[in-house]
Image 1 (cartoon, helix red, strand yellow):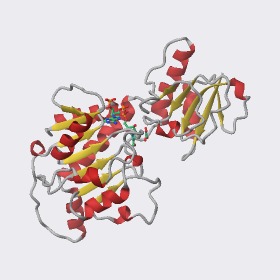
Image 2 (cartoon, rainbow, N blue to C red):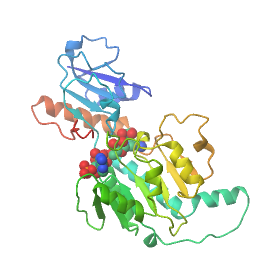
Image 3 (cartoon, protein in one colour):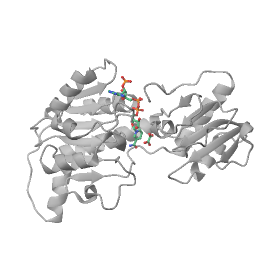
Image 4 (cartoon, helix red, strand yellow):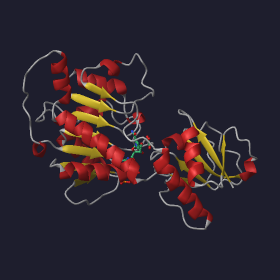
Length: 313
Ligand code: NDP
Ligand code: OXD
């Protein structure tokens, strides 16, 4: 049986090796494939070039190399087969580490103290307690729920926002348009862990940023964005930083990636940039999960972590 591996944006070698290590008897082919298209039963992809999956008559499922699937669904020639996304402890823990890291760094005035260190300024800043700083998380899925729980344990009052209603211990759960208004108006630090879909595309715009709180214990609100760059208008975030609607931002994702060298976000003193690295997909941890799913499917078991093409996540 043959698995097609189609990857854009990074070298697929580590994935190929990890897939083969987890399943030595499979044939893994890279596009352009050397094997006949009829042999290909499964595709494992990250940002596959459009059309690559269109003419595989025996394709049974597509696996995303990450949690998000917007990169797959963007292909208008996609065949009508199930799409499976990554849900894995390894990925979830990495994202929660990023969120806790960024939230604590903002809480403990990391940006200010780094600037003070450069200028050799000894000046202790007002330090609110975690209990006095509310964190709102947009997206209460696999990643948002874990981050919410870890922040709650650290003493932050945490709210979360999702599309459908939720009930989570110790977390204020909001949904729908009224829920969005409430979470934007009440969060001191806003964390975004939403998928990119038709509903969420471009939502972090001027109007959204104007709905944020005016004053917080840290000054004005702080944005931590690790969902997808397509959710935001980079220029709107810059305007909000410059006119004081936002105090600081940690951005892991951008409208265009890699972030263009001339983007003012690179050199903004109150922006912390990471290169879409909040939760990297680690081949050694994730390839065995994909291979186990493929093996189970071949035994006739149902696939899990399926994407709903209707909602787009
Ligand atoms: P899930 O599918 O588990 O969760 C998505 C959450 O978003 C759900 O709570 C869902 O609501 C909510 N949601 C979706 N659409 C809307 C909407 N229109 N309004 C309100 N809430 C909405 O995804 P994950 O938690 O696993 O991952 C989230 C995203 O994180 C990925 O799609 C990907 O884009 C991004 N990501 C980024 C990484 C990085 O390194 N920067 C790494 C990994 C993922 P409901 O619960 O009601 O369905
Ligand atoms: C993902 C990502 O979706 O790495 O997993 O962005």
